[in-house]
Amino acid sequence: MPLDLSTVIAPERTALVLMDLQTVLLGDQERALYGSASVDRLLATTVRLAGAARDAGVPVVHCPKVERPDGRGAAVNAPMWWRSARTGEYRTPAGSPDADIIAALGPEPADLVVPRSRGASIFTGTELDFVLRGLGVTALVVAGISLNVGIVGACIEAISRNYSVVVASDAVAAIPDSYTDVMLTGSIRPTAVVGTSDDVIACWLMHKE
Image (tube, rainbow, N blue to C red):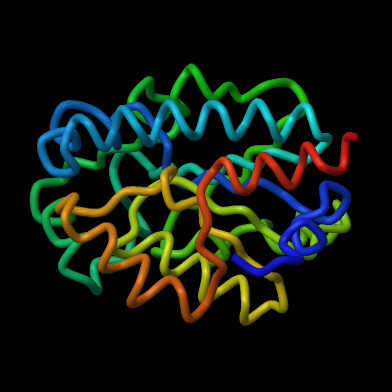
């Protein structure tokens, strides 16, 4: 961790970005893939991070995936989307309980929700960049799923837009769980600072003192 992390993620210039933390995307099927212990850790840590962010005046931005129930207009150009295109089963249809943000995370009234309907990145085809700039944000603390694709994509897209990024290492997960450390070390560290939620919260508390 850099010694000046507290200046990088000072509350007045930082947002906590939560990716794909939705009911169906962390349900029984995902527990089998990520490992139940990893899902429990991810959720407990993210709830704590969100609470600390709100207390520090850091905007909490939820970035869920929502789809048309019939999938019209959805991309089919990658293996991870082929099954839905073949079966016609889309897991996060807009307005469905399955697509809801995990209840323990809110959203609270002051939180922002920036959904995406296509693509693997939270910036692709969304208003996220405009929202963050409107908030005066220059740094992101990123948490959620998955390290395999989504979190990596968020980091790359964010630094390409001149944001500094911190990934909360205990508030993310990979499939399989054994891949988590590999991804954090090999793929995330070149684009983002990797620190624990305690590191992040300590920085925010420092600014409250």
